[in-house]
Image (cartoon, rainbow, N blue to C red; front, side, top):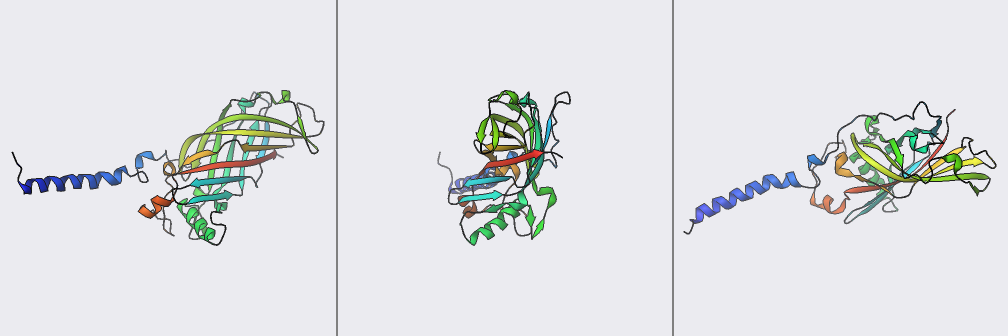
Length: 267
């Protein structure tokens, strides 16, 4: 039986209304179900008290590099400051623990190699709510990574690693996969980092001597999903804005983060 034109029109309008309701809920940039759990701080992990651990402090000049390849814009940026601690158990490196804190207020972009980077840097810090209207927001300032465990170690006993010579230093190098929790912009996610760790000693130091310096570098970037941390467009006052078609076509969904950390013995 042929349906009346009015009935068909009503059904079509109803279908469009349902789609209009559902479409924003399914938008990949605004899906609240993808948000990681909220958290204000990470509990630091400590090495087993029964193990002999060396205590190191993170070099404040440690850095990270951020690579965000978007559909129409490839954003590049860096942080230039960090803090934190490492507890290193030389004879069983899998028991080593620590907390690394990256200062996001130092994040600056180098996408355009020119004046436009200053504007993009301001936008990036505002989206992170790190620096809003020229004021640093301390609760959002730090990206924290708490080390919970290590595996895939090229050697678990540092004292048995043969040193190589680099200038005046002996260097013992170990690779590993670090498992931990990442806290950025008030949301926490589990993350892994594949790293290479160089333990630097004065020439001729005994195998069980404490290193004079530790250098930790990424062997591959750590991927951070922006929507899991509610990193999104914000106005100059830090208020969340809706995604526009223009922004969606330009901004990456992920940030690939590499790091170069230094650490020296605690006083």
